[in-house]
Length: 130
Image (cartoon, rainbow, N blue to C red; front, side, top):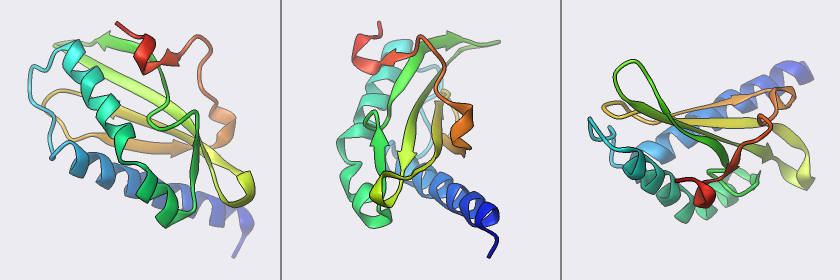
């Protein structure tokens, strides 16, 4: 297989695996009208049980999943929280950047972008937010 296609397939697989992990951990859809504090608490929960996912798929996250964030953002009718961390494969090879989005009333969503996407400057660890 073409190495570029193989890497893209791996990122799509990791996106799906992390989305399923987040949905299971948060028990599906995030409660509608969740507050900023509630979203941050949910994000912190995602980091508590990530080790089996890392082991199963031979991954490591830097910083630890869920990673860094700009904080809770106001949207048209509510709030959202986006956080990111680098995804590393075997022997520390970079695979991409995992962006996880939590929006009240929706299921969590994770996408793994090419590593060149990077984590935006100024994003901070979740425990420094709010």
